[in-house]
Image 1 (spheres, rainbow, N blue to C red):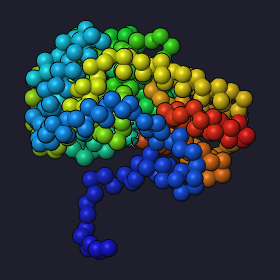
Image 2: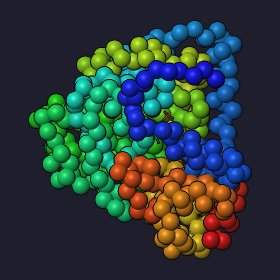
Image 3: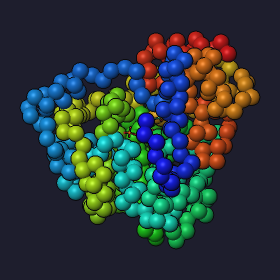
Image 4: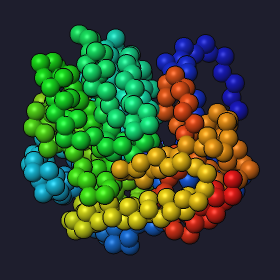
Length: 385
Ligand code: PMP
Ligand code: GLN
């Protein structure tokens, strides 16, 4: 260990280790079933690995173009055109990123100036606010309504000031699984109409929407598409969260600014994985089948908990299920999640971790991106409390 005597003026004094890391570590220490951090416990298909290894053998191992390999950008453009009816220019309007986290950080760094305000919705995904604060911006919070986690657009309207530079939306929403409707997007478009506000739309769960709903992407709303940066993640779609590859979409003038920052914080993303994904995603059934795949897991997990004392909240999308536990315990959600991990043997995420003010509604988040045997084993434990 090296002891430093520097007086560090932290840019993020309130930030510790993320709750996902904390709970996954505790789960592993206790040997608990880990339904906390969001990642699958099953493999992606061999075809994806074959295509990636072939790219390595073919010598595609050097820097790709800064915006991503042309094959992948073309495949993304084709997917978007067939899904949302919008044709993005692969040269100027699509950039491959090192996961959604980097895309979000880079977008914030490219557009938010010191002192600018960024509206986020609480509960809020953990990376947004530290990213805003790192670049000197100020997060302004709009509360989603409890317990259905829908936005109150009148409250959002009231938060807009001349300093509002950006609004970050996330649908399907982590942690709640709520989704924005076409009407929500229409109201948002109307709120930002005569402003220069950039919309940053986190759509990493775009293919995980249930019960026959269609994902409402800002990409399919022309007025919003023109002022948005839209972020997605192959980690969620193809069961490869550890590959850290995603992409960002945006009009050419916005993308030009995005790339100015992108080229100096990552420059490019690893080549063979991009080529492997480009090859794999040409078969549209691989992303189109995802909703059904996860819907079955959601239903299986909910069935496991039907005879438990948890109260399950609605889950319209994502691979997360929220549950109220007030019939079981009066503890804070952090204490409850720790007790659940240590004493019951199932790890979950306390939803207060997504609330900047620590608001605690007595709700924990379970990840159901797991094999049925994992979900059944967790269900057995959770039914006993
Ligand atoms: N946004 C949301 C809402 C997420 O849930 C996640 C990951 N769980 C990310 C962004 C980050 O995605 P990536 O792993 O591709 O960086
Ligand atoms: N986004 C994942 C989740 O919500 C975790 C990603 C991370 O660990 N940073 O669980």
